[in-house]
Length: 283
Image 1 (spheres, rainbow, N blue to C red):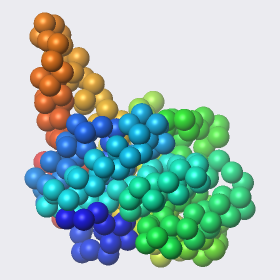
Image 2 (image 1 turned 90 degrees about the vertical axis):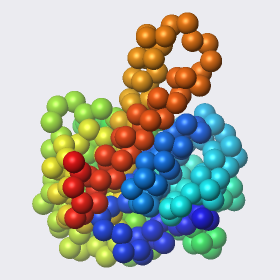
Image 3 (image 1 turned 60 degrees about the horizontal axis):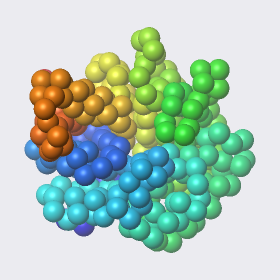
Image 4 (image 1 turned 180 degrees about the vertical axis):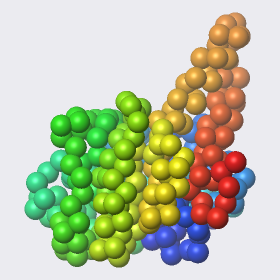
């Protein structure tokens, strides 16, 4: 199948949130696609600015395209948490079907203006756009938001922002955090309910790794349509490689390391997809 946009994914009758998984290499992408295909679920292959710097834009775009073309499920290729307008333009030219402009560190007006410009360029190329309003805590590659800098999404600002930018989906700050949670996550579900009631577009939840299943289910039931995961994939890959090396220190061929790592990541992918599908048991 050819790559699809986020808008095309959101327009399907898929029940629940579509999962977006960050990938950095062939192994991560294979695990994501394999897990999603086993469940017959659409999926979003995402790459951050850090992932682009690590793998190279053309390499990572090629992996995404091949994964979609050889797969049996709808796949979107998404540039995640990008602060660089020029990189967004390059990603669109490279074949990405969705981009996220993260200007949440800027004042409201500047965030709005930059997002509006990204929407103008992306929509002209038939590419979907995600933006962020409020500040989600934790660390995502080069973006680090300290606890004191976190800022919940304001519903009135969100309405004005969406109307002015015509963005396709919005990442909201309701208490999640990137990376590993320190302490028990506490989501403001009342705020999510308010945002859903005043906004007529898909809402995105970042910081999905480590959230208690009951909270995830509740957030999806209340209107989250895109659910982002990376840290749990990274941990599954790294922990598996550590285990194999401990058990087989004589190894020099990396393939026996990567094969079980792919399987471990695939299980994470399947568990998150099952968790975020409404009407389907995660057990």
